[in-house]
Image (tube, rainbow, N blue to C red; front, side):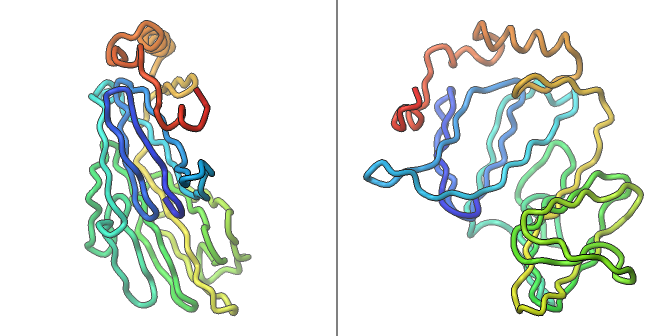
Length: 237
């Protein structure tokens, strides 16, 4: 969560609040019904919220694990700063600082803030897929020897395969910081079939999962009579 807070709950009775700066890493596994709703003030007015959500595929051997959550408050997220570069380590590690999040799919998720004039050279495992999303300011990404136009806020940069690092620098003359996330992951290399929120390896598995969902079986038993209290309070149910 970048700003505001989100209420979450599920059909198994888990509930909580993801507050500004905090994170939740949910593994859906074999399936769970849950809701994520913006919080509201005492007058019922929804507060301003801003956040990032990333969906990561699981390999076939992990697709039917039990659902689980990992939640970390902002103050407990691994963070370090060096030479004008501040990094919040959401997943993976940076400069020896490791995230507390355990990922079943090898993943790097780093939140960088570069002060004017600072730069990074961030290694990325060869052949991993990777992208950059700019949150604030503008910066240059790529080979510092080449001329690149600056990428500004809300631009997504998909990195090419075959490289082994990201070069980025804040050449801003405005004195503003550059903030962006770098996300990278190891390709699973398996077929993928997606329908709505369900992702499996074959159409047969998708059909079986939909059947489980509609008949409240194989992990969806408690969803039969469940309703989100937060969604009901906002008049959505």
